[in-house]
Length: 317
Image (cartoon, rainbow, N blue to C red; front, side, top):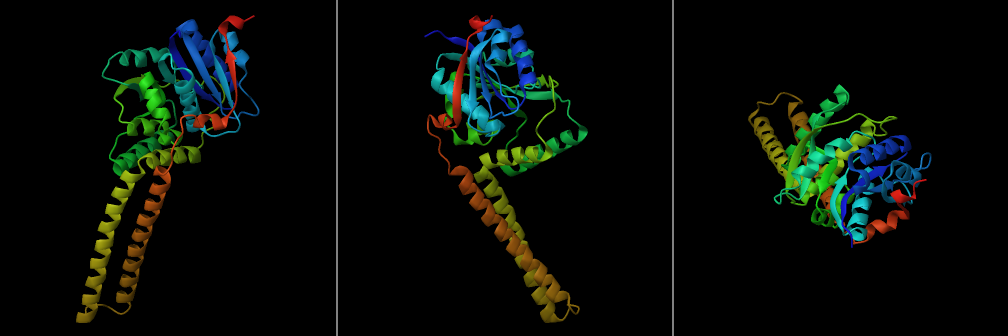
């Protein structure tokens, strides 16, 4: 079986123009050596056409999903397809289709992956083109993520992988929740490559603030057990202080140092704090069980696939 030097996995959702430009850029940088796995995430208004690949002179497949399942799951479908159907892939790159992940910088990721000491090369952003508000919330997100999980996350979906890394990630149910988080949880050896972020080829991003916030929460779900431990310990500490405060209020009341009405207000507030910390611990425990209770079958991605359309660069007119 002939080895495929480079496989590009990219999710596409209602972004035909930008994706077509990506294919042209990939062809300019890698020629016929690039094999594209484009996952159309249930597009309705602008479904991805196989001709977009063919006109660029690229071979690959267009995987059309039965419905929209989200950016991260679409990538998981692509990785599952590669692990199952393309065992002869030498290097696999995951990237967005809108131009923010620049094809010209793939070489830097592949160079870092030459070392036998690394399984995955991930892109850490040196510069961004987002608004000041987005960058401020991103910094806040990284601080919260580090405090709750004890880990540092500084990369997204843009990465290059060896075949063993693809097989490992496709077998992890965390990949269906958050790709970058699952990479951290996989314990694979990472090479971090600082890269500049590009601008979109066309159109506007479909990710709003709510979607970004949800994406951040999903990263925390991957490490639900670690979050549970830290939140639980914080709640225990707060509860202890609440109980000690209540005991102090009772002692002050008995010795006559409490002003009228002060004792009932203080005791009520401290009791509410105790109940809220207990409820927060219970909710975190339940979410941890939900997040860690999933399993993934080897061919789970097939449940979402409507059709797989092969495309050959030699079919160009």
